[in-house]
Image (cartoon, each protein chain N blue to C red):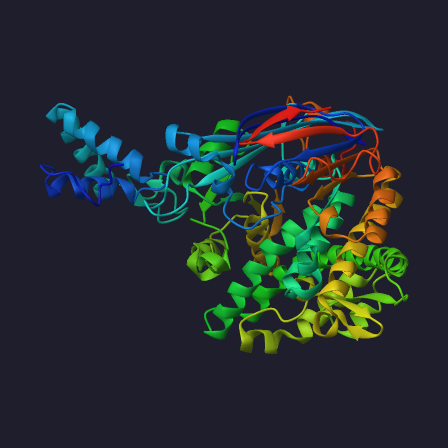
Length: 389
Length: 209
């Protein structure tokens, strides 16, 4: 699949951008703070509805629009050509009032697919991307929440049922935890938990099974890629650490996964009430990365962690292609300059295996014509793009 | 930028008070509150008087119906007193506005019961905060003829939690508990329906008559 057109209006540094894109490689060069990352972030947002950087949605709306307009709107739109046909995607982030003068604008989002108002879950996965960035090592060395976020974004692009389950899970979990605190204060009866336990286990089972399945594939690919990227060769092992009792984890491939998860929730009610929170479930999952049998987060070097992050992204390209039969769009956010020739070569190989790759670089001469023949090259300055070749 | 908490010189405090009163209303932000307040200020005195009286009137004269808990100016309300209505079925809704919505369908000839909310632990609302005891009292009444309770809560998480709670509570009383079907909106195109709705319509499909 590839992006045929990208349109940004009032998105961060972009007042107005209309960009026609073709299959093949695109290099977007420019100094720092000209909007290179914002451009790739916008594409990733259209694919996943998740922003790759933290902060409120109000930050997506360009500063000019926020200052000048009563109802500022950031509009992102893409035309995607996939094997299944053409599809247009649109996300509008609409600014409202400030709840307080020092608070960010209240915002709401509107989604459209082929011009028709849809939910976020209908948009996710229509465009699939894998974005490589220098922050990828945070998946390896950061807190578990980073790894769960990675798993959610990756799975969401592959399975619409996963998206719906994770939205539902989050809401049910919040309700269940509130009820646990009410129970702690003896302001509710334990049987009020029944509904929330049932809902949590049904949605949670979809998350657990989806994560187990994709991590098995990701782990196998990441191990292969990691070996190719290192010399002397070291083994990388990716292991899922689900936050459920063993008897639930053993049922990952079986139909009664939800039933076992539900039974485990019931068994743990008394302790959950004491703590006022749900102690088991996918919201506490983690993923272990072992290099040479040792925990990468604790004992690997910066270089090894970076390489593991890179291997994971390359594995994600393979997973996405394998699962859907169609390669995702690759977004490389200024990662090539910091790689040595061997690793660059591997990333370039992955880039040749997909229909479209969009690369940002601080330097117009890199990647070079030799490395990337036939690439369309642009220069980006203050949110405006100029075609160079 | 002007802020009502930092009034320009010459603005006295009564207007600040009015702006803040508007701001407390649901869906009104600080800018809208300012606009409303200055509108009232510029409008003829009769308009302000009408508004004030309407506000007081509604608080003075509207009460909850002792039976169905709907808003009414006289208790019991007209629907509860209407002898032509079917006394064997009660439709349970979240809010008074939902009674109006169901009445417009002319599809329900029975009585109503308004819960005034749904179960939502995050908002601190449990079953005891809803008008559920009042519903139980009606069903346990020696003279009751009710054989069916139709739960018409919204088809979202909290509505479903409430409907399941009511089902469990009421079934032991030997009462049939049903809930509204979920599916495609009338006059809709299949291709425009979202996956969840279409999936549910499939799940709850019916025999062609």
